[in-house]
Image (tube, rainbow, N blue to C red; front, side):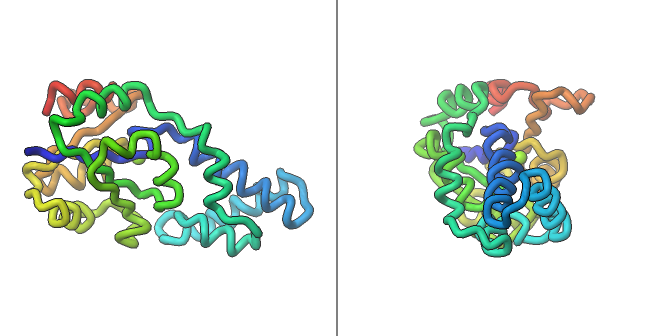
Length: 209
Ligand SMILES: [Mg+2]
């Protein structure tokens, strides 16, 4: 049986929830804590994010930032309150409902567990395993080792793994090179190429498996 692996942000769930957390809630809490305006807080917070950068594992971790910014609240509580803003793409929901029972499905995401758990809470039952690259593998990218590790853990060769995600390099090129049947979801139609593995709607995946 084939195993179908899904990225989360930009693939199953839109970016609203994550953006609200990092760009609205965190600066809001920072402003309250340090007695400054939201605008000033956002400027400082953004500068700090940029200084660490997305090549550094700390950039991904709510617990790191809450400690650094001296925010006296558990990030999980903040995330929990934002849960109503998690939006599963309708085509994604239809696709996983359709594939459920026919394929084993897993999740391979860069999001840290605190964020990932809330993003996928509504659809968790469809997936046999959930991997957070940052929390479980301490990796900031889905590099070849990440995919090989997933294959080993689920005990399937790359040729029987299907992966779909929205990042051209890390969800598409990298797994493809390993012999994984990779698909890119490009709902905005930004990539103009005649490539049957580039999907404009996730439901196109159903007939391609
Ligand atoms: Mg993504």
